Length: 201
Image (cartoon, rainbow, N blue to C red; front, side, top):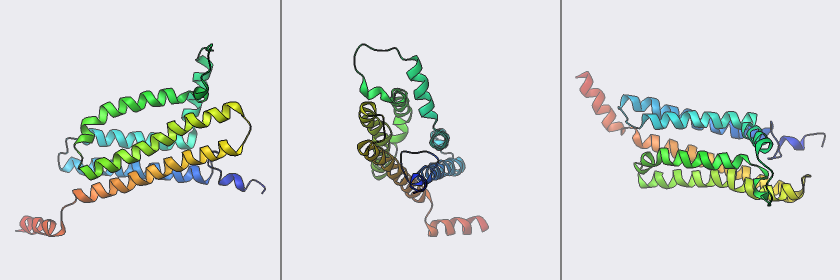
């Protein structure tokens, strides 16, 4: 198809699925920064967490477009010692760093997360589980098939499609949750009008 199909293959870079993911991650970063910025007016004590998440999602969008984690993986392969036993799941060794970073972020955000209403706790947790399950979990699973057969094959293609689809779904759910949470923070129209009338009086 003269390269047209490559524009839609999830496992390839610099195509339409990549652009879609980059835009969604940028939207997430913008929404997180918006919550941080508006929270300053309310003296929100959680401002540092919102700002951290905004910067983190900005990094994720950059990584999605420039494949930083793949480069890190190549560096790790060069420095990891050759082990006397099989570690097929380490075909993409960047997942080691990914798991470590994930644990650190969970520890850092845990108390912040516990302060959310039950509904938003569930939605945030669900989006995080789906995203990490795709980005790290499916990456480990697909590593088995890529290791056994490095050439392009249907199974590996399907697994990477599932992986990218999980990441996209998780970010879309995260965006919805952020919008829903931010809406819940906004004052009711009646209360807002009353506040304006009071200030004018």
